[in-house]
Amino acid sequence: MENFEIIQPFFSTSLNVNYTIYRSRVDKERFYFAMYNGSLLKLPSVTTILANTLPMEEWLVRWIAHWGYEQAIERRNQAAHYGILFSMIVADFIRSKQIDLSTIEARVATYRYANNINFPTDFWVQRLKEDLFSLACFIHDYSFEPIAVELPLVSTKYKFAGTIDAIGWMSIGSGVNGKKLKRDSQTQRVLAIIDWKTGRHGFYRSHEAQLHFYRLLVEENFPELTQTPIKLFNWAPKEWTSESDSKYSLKDQTQSKEAFRILNYLAIYQVDDSIKNHTFKVFDGVLKLNSDNSDRVKFVDYADLIRNKFSPQNSIVQENEVPENGTVKKDIQISDVSNEEMTAVEVASDVLSELDSFFQQLKEEA
Image (cartoon, rainbow, N blue to C red):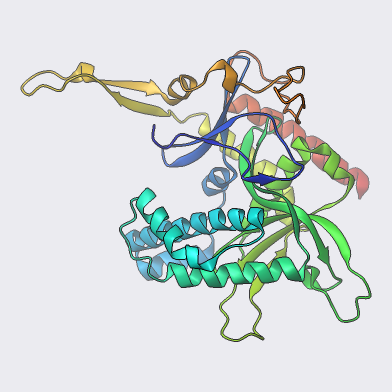
């Protein structure tokens, strides 16, 4: 169970949640876990949902064909490691409001050691410095004021979870993707969810859907924020060679049609996941040569294995419970969870009901 971890917001000024959430990988898929009144909530991550429901995009098919499957998977995993390290450093950068670039080399070395990386990362140090510079330019250009970074949230209404890269206030102009134009006499201050990407080849359908899933998480956990429209942006660094070059890409995904599709993805995923048998091999005792060692291994349901990790103090805090500091932070409500675990098919029916209501509302507004 080395891949089992507690996750909490890395940085937050006002968005506080008072529940403990765990993250782990099950059969190469990422899940979030939480306990409520003795019941285990197993929630798929946004990326897991999309990876299992979205068709493979054409650019990815061509990319795999170019490199070959094995090398493509290896390069994908290497890029994922870079993206994780970048997000970690960005979170620290935003929290501290500064970063000493001379520490980047040591950060890379520490990450390599902690993750047993054996592939070359010589170019990471320079690239991280360039990407962090690009990010600093974006924050300055749009007067971005973060209120939370690396914010893990769960949806008990739709039964999924995810970690939001950043949410905060930013100033946008009247141009495409919020660009400030010379004719703009003033800018508009908006609340935005931002998802960092480190690829330099554009944004894709899955990126759009990911942001709209994140908006559902924010709206459910912080309904007070829905009083103002929430904008959705993807950000990524660009290749640049001179001071006058554009340093980053910013894409407004607020009006993406993926907003109308994400609940369908969720319903499909939950139906498919209901037929999966997530078990974990647990080894114990002493192996003996020339003996029947069948009793040294047990196949345990992953949910049971995770349940043993929890203790009462790790359960979600009730509204009437007050922390020692005397302040009550925002609590998540799970009013629809019974003592028995809800099956994926039952959840899918609940999601489909939401879809019916959603499309009925669209008809009325048309």
